[in-house]
Length: 266
Image (tube, rainbow, N blue to C red; front, side, top):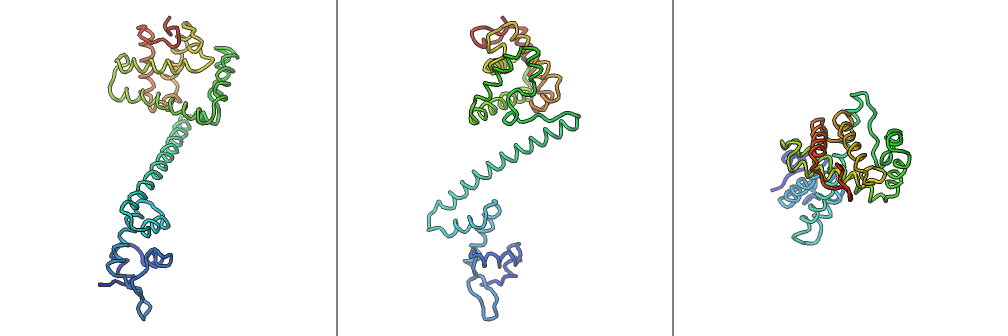
C-alpha cells in the first residue's frame, strides 16, 4: 500500500510542506517517484515517519533525528540519544526555572514599589548593606566579609550561593510541612543557619562574639519577618516569619549549638 504526500500528511497530522522538507533534506525520502512526479510512500517510510514525529515531539532537532535513525544498527543508539536529549532538556528547564524566579522576584518587588535585589554573583556578597554594616559593626567588618567574598573563585561563589538558597528553601519546607518553630527539625535547622552565619568573616558569630552574635541574629530575624525582600527570598512571607520565630525561640531557650568555640547565646 502506498500514500501520496497529501494523503500521508493528512493521516500523520502534519503539512505536506513538512513532508517535502523531510525529503529535501534526506530525512524521509519517498519509496518512489511516479512518472507523474508524485512522491509515493510505503509501509517502511510510514514507520520511519512515525519515529521522526515521536523524536520531534521531544524537541530533538531534525539533524539529530537523522543521525539517530541513520546510525549503524545499535539497539541502544536511540536510547542513548534520548537520554542525552533528556539531560539537555533538564538543563534547559533549570535555566527557564531560574529565569522565571528572577522575573517573579522583579515583578513582586516592582509591585511593592521596591528595587529588585541584584544577584549576589554580580553585585557582591553584601554591597547592598555596606552603610548598615559599617554603621553597626564597623568598616573592618564590612571589608572582611567583602574581601572574603571577592576572594572566592566563581565556582566557590556558585557553590556558596547554592547552599544559601538551599538553606532558605529548607525553612519553607519546614513551614509548609506544618512544623512548629521549636520542633526538633526546626531547631536542627536553626543550628545549620547559625553555622552558616559563622562562616562569614566580619560577623560577630565568625569572631565568636557571643553577645553581639545574639544581637545580630535577632536583628536578622526582625528583617526576615518585616522586610518584603526577605519574604521573596524565603519563597513566602509565612516561611520568612517561621524562620524568624525559630531563631528567636532557639536563642530564648538556649538550645543552640556552638558556632565556633563559643555558644551564640553565651
